[in-house]
Amino acid sequence: MKPKVLVARAVFPETLELLRAHFHVVSNQDDHIWTPEELRSRAAGMQGVFTTGSERIDAAILDACPELRICANMAVGFNNFDVPAMTAKGVLATNTPDVLTETTADFGFALMMATARRMAESEHFLRAGHWDRWRFDMFAGTEVHGSTLGIIGMGRIGQGIAKRAAHGFGMRVIYHNRSRLSADLESACKATYVSKEELLSTADHVMLVVPYSAESHHTIGAKELGSMKPSATLVNIARGGIVDDAALAQALASGQLAAAGLDVFEGEPKVHPSLLKLKNVVLTPHIASATIKTRMAMAQLAADNLIAYLTQGKAITPLNPQVIKS
Ligand code: 8YV
Image 1 (spheres, protein in one colour):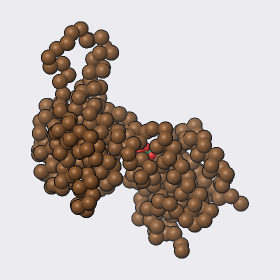
Image 2 (tube, helix red, strand yellow):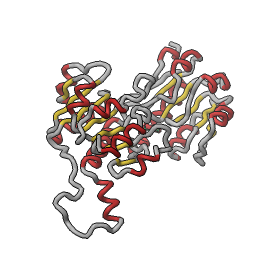
Image 3 (spheres, rainbow, N blue to C red):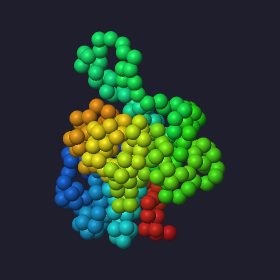
Image 4 (tube, rainbow, N blue to C red):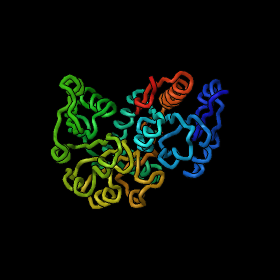
């Protein structure tokens, strides 16, 4: 009998077709947002679950689904997985690294440019019919080329952004990371390691690409915002919760910080109401990896992990490889 797999959100028809060739598939093609209880009852009896970053896999669902063997996340971030609990229950966790690196780096860079050069604010102004003349300082923003970019979180995506900045825009790149990169990687990225304090006080643009964890919660709060240059911009393409959004809204409203670009939010899809009222913030709905090609590659990799594990006991991108029996 074919193993049973739950696809927890709507996905590409091609992904479902591929999964159906190997599994008995129950899918949520109507894209209902299930409560944790609904997810639990639908996952009961399944051997695999295809998740996105929105579905939480924790001890409660693992207890309710003793037959579960793998959860394949269509995301590189996996803060929706309680990996230690999964490991304890012998459930494999997989994610989708690499396939989204360059696309996400493109978006981070684009969001920084849109923020610094006030693209969203000026577009709204034009559409609202307010443009009646040229002015010497109209939507004058902050320089990008030749300025200093500070990257917090120098994994694959951070490195992709550093290369774009240093090689394409002649920016000076400084970074802070839990561990320092090798000399080879630092030279490929033309990036200099500095303390978080030095980064915040020196950078003209700060980019957050750090994974979410209890440790990285509110990496940027009121204190950190207070140590940034008033002319600086802040971009978050990492995860909601890395920034204290209420403190950020206050800093943007008071002129303590020039502008921000946010693709992720605390408690998304809800957005802090104060942020919605501000002009000096560019807001996008968690789309940094959203090109058709990249999203298809992410879906394919999640599906391939399910197929490899449930049909051959192997995995392509395991997060807890220790559960795989040799
Ligand atoms: C996903 C992301 O689109 O990969 C990640 O970690 O944040 C995005 O690329 C999102 O998590 C939905 O799965």
